[in-house]
Image: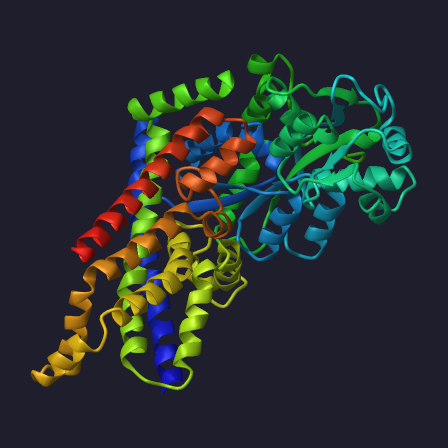
Length: 300
Length: 231
């Protein structure tokens, strides 16, 4: 009897939730149209939505906020931009919850495509990673190669290091540097209080490192965008290991494959490539991203 | 400290001048939490009546489970709803993930224990007198239940308001199944979390003030209601 009631209740809950979801979706849509009006872009009747999951660095730098309205206007679609570390973005892709991803972790991207979850890995921009730290540089890392800098941190025990610790592309790069420096990452991770696993996006991690006077590994774009509010300075910026390539991958099970292809074409088009190259130059006086669509990416 | 005061000043200006981004987020949050609260009340007040007016084995145990779930972690609800409505999950074909509807669904479930449990308490507080009198005067079961509900309406409304308070201030569900999409699923709490990480302190404070005001309205209403019960 009770079981019967409970199962009925469950059905009702799901039904109501579905209806409730629908109505509030309409509300949100109405509201969106209003938002769009204020930005003087014509409303999009019966617009379909496209979902892109992006690595936090392309979000925290404001690049997606800059490109989003252009894409929406050109293709008459609402673009939902979700930010997450590369690991989570890939997981959303595997589950079919997003249509396109923009990420930066070559080995995992190639595996992702090989396993049939993505169509093709298409690099569209790059910059470099940096090791940044407080200006007094307690472990004297300035000017070192990344592997040497990491070795020094591990051996000296002087100076804190904040790791993303979130399975992101930057975290993946950090692990690769530890490996290149001759350490097992698990040993590093558990070696002491100097190694801090932040578990946040790139922006919050920089803020955390700044507060703690710690070192951290960051992509150049996010660092430049945050630099004004931080005391952190770039200390290690030389070495092939530090190359950071962003790729766009269409998800095989995308709900909207044509539009997903449009986004790939948009990002690699000549016009947008130029916009990416110029993004932030006016504000920060330095290039955040170097466009690279269509270039021979053998080494990248 | 001066930095904080300056940010506070800018935040107040944003609210007074009606900053469109801040207010669209506040409005969206209100719509989502209100929808969730109404749906949850619509379903779980009747459920509470069913539980209260029926005698069955394990009733006490069920009620104590419900009370335990008052403080169910929001991220846990978020994770469970995510697994159900992700395209790879059992309800994946509804396409609800990363929509406002997904947040509504999660919040309905999140506050269900509060609404159910507090409604049961409200009904229990009425004692046996009203139902017995109603029944002896020839009322049917349904009439009797409605009578008790209407006698305890202030306490039931308090239950609903408590549910709203939890829905409007939670972040676990909104960030996991909503995804904090700008202009679509961004709520007050997820916007604050993002804003603090990006160093947008003034906007975050403005959103925080609005959130706090909403919470204050709820708590003032609750205390007014409880006051009128005593009188």
